[in-house]
Length: 319
Image (cartoon, rainbow, N blue to C red; front, side):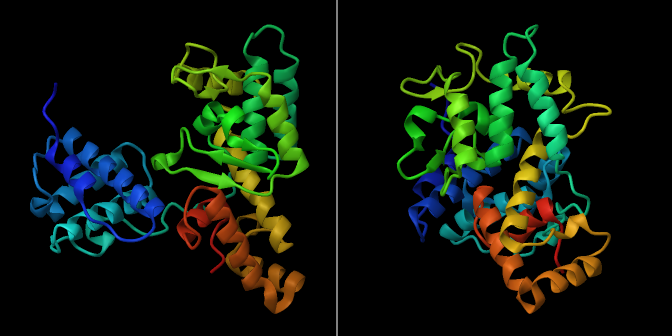
């Protein structure tokens, strides 16, 4: 048996406040902090010994892996919680100390795939007799488009156990970012029709009692096959109509329009142009509608309402 990691042990033993779900998220993200720290060969053994130097090394490593400042800030927030639980208050409270800027993941240019490009890809996949897994890939990209699921979430969703038809909700708990489960409420008939089409491809996974949409025995290698199917049918890659993640962007784009009644900022040339269009459509009510739409989108994306750095990434900033 390998030697246990005292920092990981400390995470599990730390006394935290707040709802159990929040405590779970903090511990999950703090474990990621330790994982990166160990990959960098940093040997701190107690949370009382963690310093700004350790935080800087984690920031550098996560950025080198292509992770955005929003995710780094999330991990740092969790690590600070654990440090404070052990009365270590020496960590800088400002992420700018480590070159991490709040909201810098926001992209002013929309990355949402067009409905036309999505439908074209879906049709190609459904009609492709040369690729045995084309139908399975098709139902998964449809779930990404209709429900805003991430690629891994669409592959690992447990329909037999987590789709509540009576209450029109879906628990998303496998393959989620940071291991945070969330429930999608108020599913539309169109969304539930997509779930019904996906049921044909449900397979028992390698985990006892868990069912998902990946081929039996293939495991996470299926995620690479899903990428291949997207490229093969024109959704990703050079000269493509979008990307797999662009399906999620389009879902949140539509959520925003459906609630607010006007297009989000990244559909306009400038913030000023957006505000003028929103004012013309909704008058002085536009800021309230904008905030309500963003809260709903942030929650659907698997984050807490109020995380404007998250909604900015999908919609652009309103201010």
